[in-house]
Length: 220
Image 1 (tube, rainbow, N blue to C red):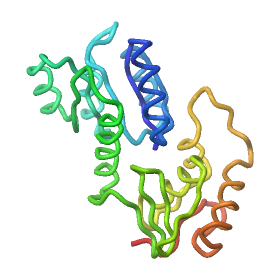
Image 2 (image 1 turned 180 degrees about the vertical axis):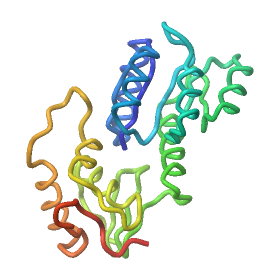
Image 3 (image 1 turned 30 degrees about the vertical axis):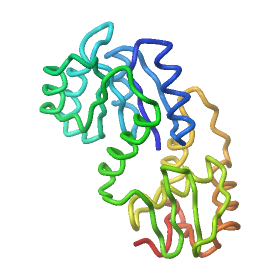
Image 4 (image 1 turned 90 degrees about the vertical axis):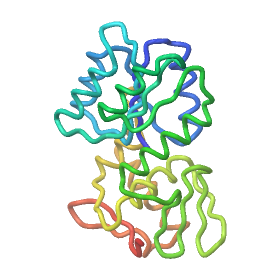
């Protein structure tokens, strides 16, 4: 799960990066409306965590611009507890959820998972392909009821493949899920993770579609 966090408080931003990172997310951070617009124009995200009060404007303007151009990326607003009017305006403008400051990082991560799940068109909390089950809340996997040990990035690759049934994911799309802007992408990292995953969940579980990418077989 790749998340854009728009927050100008450096201390809070550090906490958000750590908390969402521990929850399995790849986090990209910006502190202004201008940088948020540039990020949204140049990259795809599973969700946006958006502060309302930014140095060069309001997060509501960013949200309004997203919805005006039919960008349906799920958005969670961060608000002060007494900003009832702003919360209402945000929800009416197209926000998917909000959370008042101060907040619990575990609750934030759960809310981000929920809006991202709905953004992918899923109602249930787990991802399933045959007897393979992933639980994004616990970053755990089972195959035929038995636990499968996955690294954080192996889990991210498999989750990306299982989120949209039957969809082919290109190498570039998978890399976007694994690495933030400031991280160097190794040339063969996706192939290595796919190889390791096939060893753990079965070679037949992940199909290579030549020239296009990968997809998971047996998706429900």
